[in-house]
Image 1 (cartoon, each protein chain N blue to C red):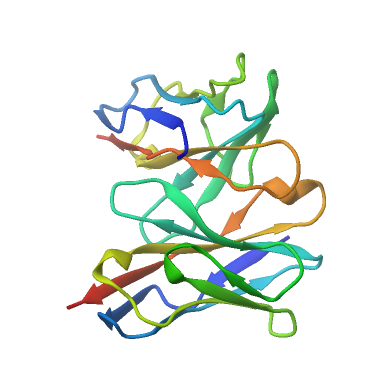
Image 2 (cartoon, rainbow over the protein chains, first blue to last red):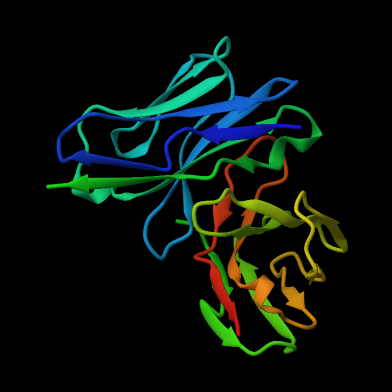
Length: 115
Length: 113
């Protein structure tokens, strides 16, 4: 069974500062990896995904993530954050087999941007 | 832009009432899901469906039930609500093939008094 650990429940940063949200996963099989963002009072939307190929994945709104198989990590980064990035961010994993559409989510990281 | 809708967005009801949370999508997606979300906790899959007349229980045990009579509609029902059912319920859908993107509704926040 897969599991996802988001190491920080809350991350406060100043506007225009860089940010990294950490995600580690455990799985006995090869996986697909995702980051979703949830703005206040809205549903989740896909930020980026890693399926195969280059381990550095670029997503929307200037975010990127790097898949590190040896460390079973998929950390999310942005070089310069904006107030509008304030949201909750969820890391998710699915296996590459028949369960490819069943995502297992982490507990979320609340990103707060201070002016 | 995703076209998946949940109603009601907010519901406050008394213990013992029967409730149905509605979820509809206009994208023709075969797969639909219900997740339960509590503050500071991971989303838990409680039900999913791979098509009409197909429903499965998810990883988290739930007293709710679902049905899938039409492709676009995936309602969730609680026959007798209890305070322990207080939570946010998120509906999602995806295309059939491959590890695709899940499209989420805005959620239904249920409070049982």
